Length: 305
Ligand code: SF4
Image 1 (cartoon, rainbow, N blue to C red):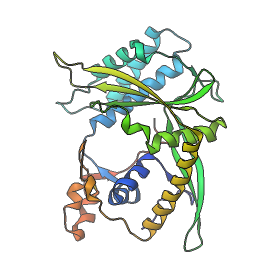
Image 2: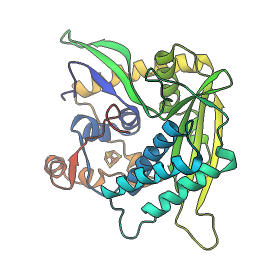
Image 3: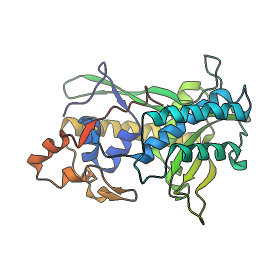
Image 4: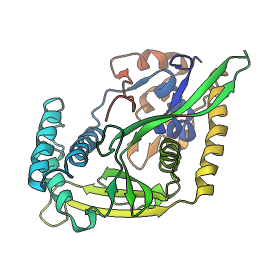
């Protein structure tokens, strides 16, 4: 299969690695064919709007009061909802998201105990895009393919004199922090931050934003924060492991060796969005992938917040 090179280079983000290391067929559909389901994904859409609102806060909070930067956040949320309408039965409405942001801004456990890193533009760094060189792979045709690890850092920050990366996670389910503690993306963000700043990060923090359908009894909005120290050797191990996976990705893609790994067809978040394709006889799959039920992948961490 043809690799989606940009100027001869391969850019791999967290989603590409996650798909390759769970089900290689989903990697093929998502990363090589660049097709994804047109189905509404309110959790992802609303999560992106939350990030947009936090970007506004990080850029403004050091120069104005909570009430003023919160107004700017609400304006940003409103603008985002002009371009996206949640399904009628979904609770992630504009007013719900404004309630979440207001609660986050006042939550005692989410208070700032850190100082922002200042970028070259003199502004606090937030939602920082990165594309850091990983390695060059020489293919069987003697072509050299430079490979980059790319993504966005939600909020690189200083705790005392230590460098940390703070990542926001919006979710309806409280599964604790275990899924993040050995997470490829989280440790990879530290590697990118290390390369970008030349300073070894101490670890990552996760701000868990639990938003649920408001109910009379349960808590609709809840916050949790966890900080995880990561040793230098684990970040170095991430680099070595990632380079091995990159070689596998290029080898498997070129050899079209991208089997279905069916343990992932139904996960904790529901069915895989490609299940309707995989259930078809092989000859019919391409037709459905190219149909109006799927659309081009346009997400690019280097362009979008
Ligand atoms: S439906 Fe199953 S086999 Fe097909 S891409 Fe998804 S996880 Fe892989």
